[in-house]
Image (cartoon, rainbow, N blue to C red; front, side):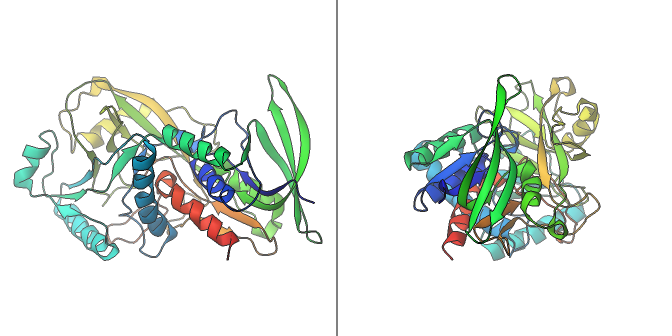
Length: 393
């Protein structure tokens, strides 16, 4: 009675990973996205960092999926020839309080079996001459960078090779569940304003909501009002750097103690070029994607604490991404990934708050956690396995 066994909504890096995994053993899978290309929202607007999993509560999905996903991602990159670099990361402390924070972070990493080491300041200038750390440096050797576009192209190829079907320019406009038949009828708007659009409907046995910024809205189409979720949008702007000096060989992060987030940090692209960001700015619309050039002075002031030779004239606004939050700016408690079967809707799996545009959020100096982000990019392959396992449990 169904047209497909599974529908996966959203062709970002997480939706692609889920769809590719389901296609390898769960029947006919349709992957849809409302845009005209894969990965055009948060998946293509992030720092492309492979995170180690240092910042999150030990038993959270964010930690477990980040740590597992990191290992899976490095393995796939090596085997499939996806461009990546295991460059490592330094987190630098400038005060006694920040040093104490890094020591606590190292102990937490030890408990989680995440490799870290303290870099003696006497050696630091020989390794990274441009970097200033007055008190301590914690090194994370398993942090890296990856080409997100190459990864998504690989996942799409894997999905299609397993018999999966992709429909772009296809927006979900309504969902109904027929409990007597166990089927979801999904209405789609196919096309765009330029070429025109039409509506169609298909039936599915199972639905995976991996719609990213739109995931709460899709969920609200089905769930009763008391289970509706309000989306919030946290924009992060990135700044490019146009000079060849100074140089670093690894990512540099300020110590998060005392920051409203992880601080404005230095990342590299695969060509070795520097960029800085993201910051945090709450916005009303997921379409507010213009980088905030007015924040350049603030970014420069933060960056020169650990990279004092930066040329301000070489900094320029580059791009911005939106983090798909499911808690308001006022919430200072930790918010984990939501990956769950929905009660009363067999076959529906919701993925909510899978944040991807970077690593900014809220931490306190006592290592209690607020609404952090973790790069969904790092966790994507592990999330694919988790969703597959949910359907087999």
